[in-house]
Image 1 (cartoon, rainbow, N blue to C red):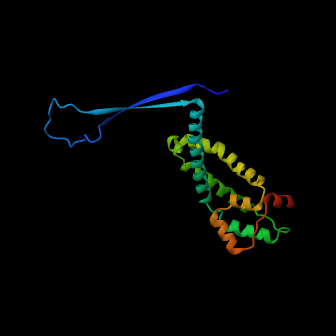
Image 2: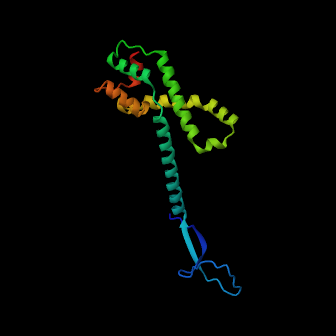
Image 3: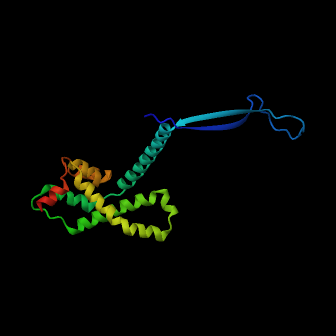
Length: 192
């Protein structure tokens, strides 16, 4: 069934008639009428049209936040040691043992990426410092765990690498090992 509820808004705009705009004089004449034209604009929207406008604004907002997230996520390199160990892993998949230090390094870089994103948002300026601290202390671990869940559920090694590594990291890996195709970390964990 079609929704027939309509919102009607009228806007009144006062404007000087075209061609009648003159330079203000320092001499004021009391009886000179000011010629103005009234323009009335009426907008008529039904509920579906309002929802569509709202959806467009929400989509723009989500795209903007996504762009900010990607910029901050890609802005933090995982570092030389992670790149070196990743390439070592791919050369010797059967005997390679990942170090605890590697996990800690990746963990700290993911934390850095998340914090950069969160503090790049305009809303963080409006939250008092102690509240920011409490929110981050409570939720940062969950966000870091979520990145592991996302990584674990990505289908291909290439997509997982694009998620984990920054563009500068990927360029470095390609320059060191041109034929490198990557390996899924869940496959590494299964083999261990």
